[in-house]
Image 1 (cartoon, rainbow, N blue to C red):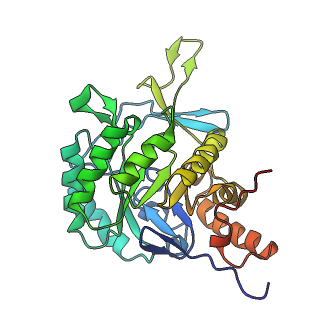
Image 2: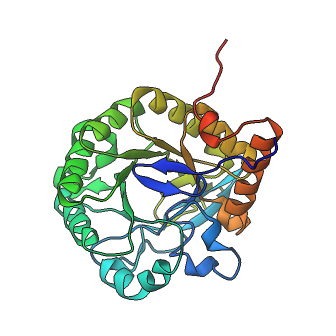
Length: 307
């Protein structure tokens, strides 16, 4: 084809120059990668998860490698919303891509307070709501595994902000489409999935867990087939855009998600292996579209053919 393929996508009212985003928790607050990556070429930047107050996270060891991936139990360590606004946001405001704040809480009230605070902050284009967190008011049950609890968080956030709300779904459920529909009905503008799968690694010599937290979140290429399947299921069950996450290392991996129904993707663990992974994937997607004579990325989304 003579012209370059059109790579721009619209996600919940946000225009992204391309459909490749960085995943929360794997790209810091972007400045950490500024000497290695042309940040302005990214579709969007999702910052490390934010809480109302600073969080130190879990004690080490917090990361262990696994076959085709890694297990982490960082414990959502972050600087808190005050330090984010004062220290991190000035640099982020200088960048072209939309900045999306990933938020989490242990009560519905905390989520609502964060959303209200971010609503008034200039330079944050949207929110990604991490519902894979324990609800302390319900005995530690994770918000994201119960449709009603998930909906409660989304409704509370939706009431406090006019900015786009993306809800990040947990894969540790029986039927992810049930949670997805609850989040959509409660006001989510888009859904991102999947978060990490709960796993455990044991040191057989000491017979102790390799993580101080005992369990952690599994990410990397090992989880990609699970993520693709869940994205495919959710894309058929909801009307809002779906953002695919899970083990994307190459452009070919991202293309699987688009064909399954994702409108955009997030790059996570691959950033630790190759800081330029997201941009390499952008280039690879563009080359694939050109090679197959596909004029725009939207023509690829949801194009799975089932015999």
